[in-house]
Amino acid sequence: MEHLNPQAIFIVITVFILFVNKVVDMMRAKQAERAAREERQARRADGQPRPPLHQSAPPRQQAPQQAKPASPFQDVLAELFEAAGVPTNSQPKKPPVVASQTPPPIPAITRSPAPALTKAEREALDRLELRNERSLVNRQRHHREATEKITQLLLSRTTARQAVVLAEILGPPRGIQEMDQRQ
Image 1 (spheres, rainbow, N blue to C red):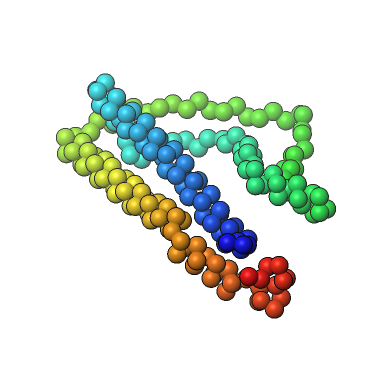
Image 2 (cartoon, rainbow, N blue to C red):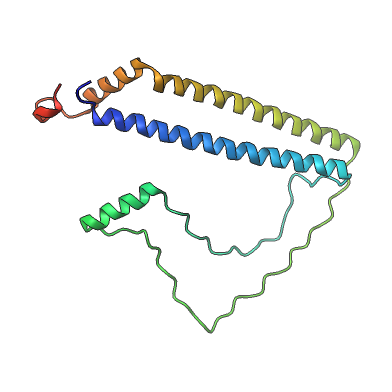
């Protein structure tokens, strides 16, 4: 193991980072689903009617969206581009400020009462919610199996060998490589 191919290392690190991001996203989705389920159960226990599946709400004015926080990779890339003299679009352009205009008032949003459901509609809604929960469980199981397979791939020696072979195939020809890069 005199010299590891940088491309193989890069591929493995990239896959690992994607794996960690996916696990974090799964945990957030699971927490959101759990909170929604607890809220539904609390509503049922209180005897409040369920909200309808589709509500037509009056259009709202949207507040200006704030920029998402930059990831550490974006910060490093921005610094490298600035050092190289390449302009970046990391700073958004500010719109001109007009002092004489005042925004129109936002209309009050009123909640319409939920319509009463018949027994057949309630049963159909329960079946639909049950089916959605089952499909969510199936998706989570499938995702868990996929992440286990990826983990096994990252830990095996054969995958490391395959990464080296891919680096040789996709990398520069041996005649162009420097002497210290050759094995």
